[in-house]
Image: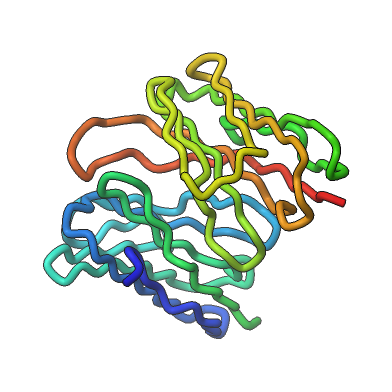
Length: 108
Length: 117
C-alpha cells in the first residue's frame, strides 16, 4: 500500500467549472498536508498547506482535510486553462510522502 | 522569484565526466533535500540534510555524492553517471518544526535538467 494515493487522471473539466482532486493517506501519524502544482518540465509549486480538519480557502483554491477518514482534497473554482497541470498531494508524518499526482486539463 | 536557487538549469554530461549541481536557499531553513524526478513520476528522495546531518535513501547509487558546506548550501557531486540517471534534479528546503507529524512545506528550486550521454 502506498503512503499517499491519488487518482492519476487525466481529469478534464471545462473552463469555469470546479475541479475536484482527491487524495488518501495511510499514516495516521501524518499531521501536515500540502498540495503542489507542477507544470510539465517545471518544479513543483506550493498551492496550499493544511494542518487541521476542515476547509482552508485561498482565492480560487480550497483544501479540505478529514483526519478520521484520512482524506485530503483540493477544489479549484472557476477553473482556467492556466490551471492545467499535474497536482501532487504530499503528506508529512516523519518524512514527506508524495502521491503519484493527478493530471488536470481545463478545456477552454 | 524562487528563494531556493539551483545551478545550472541544464547540464549535459558524458558518462566519464565529473560535475556538480549547486543549490542555495535564503529562507533560513535547517533542512535541505535532493530529489530526482523522472517524467510523469513524483519526485523521489535522494538525500536529506537536517541540521547538517545527512540521511541517505539507500537505493541511491554511490555515483551521487551530496555535500552540505553550511546550512544554506547543498551540492550534489556526479561521477560516472549512466544514461538512466537523466532526469530533473530538484533541490528543496524546509523549516524543521520538531512537532511529531508536523512540518513546514518543501520549497523547491527551479531544478536542473540533467542529460547523460
